[in-house]
Image (cartoon, rainbow, N blue to C red):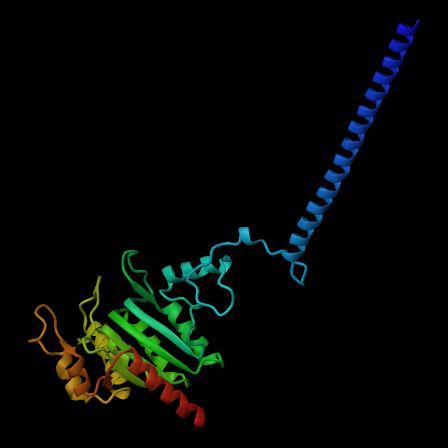
Length: 304
């Protein structure tokens, strides 16, 4: 009988111990769940704080990892970012040869005249050209823009279409803003008229200029009217050069019709010293000299 009672008491004790262990385990699990919940809440709060840190006052989120790389080709006072305008500027370089958004100096318009001047007919795609339909709006824009105080022409051209070059030259000579031209490399053929069209002209120490009569390509009718047409066209160019420079008319015509200077052509190739000596160009100098003179002209124009 006592053995049975001892067995019953042992079973009860084991059951109580088992129940106590289960209670402790369930309590520990509940504590772990509560601790896990608190940790997740803390993580969420921290993530919210980080999100709030990345959000500026305007409510816009700054995502540093998704920023586009800066385009070093664009110079601007604002943040240097890639946008739709960057493609337009690169296309502008290909087509026009200049970049309107690159403006380290806001009050001076820089216009480059390079290669061959293209007129009414398109030149082959492999030719470097300056299209007069691009240059003329730039000159008009510089004249109409109140922020532009002066224009600097950078010239390195072999010449080209006579009427297109003369149209650009006449327009430059007629604007009221101060203008300075700088011949870099060469200012040949109708490039001579472009160089003297500015209010003041300079040529680089190694620059050259070719003076020769006009010529034509293609179909020519051999009648006296054709000769008279060339005479009138040459007279227009000669008059413009003489009226916009200090060169003597007889000296200019002498160099233009010289047959001893160029082996297979008529005319003369003049270096920098020679074009300054005859009064065709005002001064020998580079970019810094051109900028200094242009600034002086701008100051005089502002005070007048």
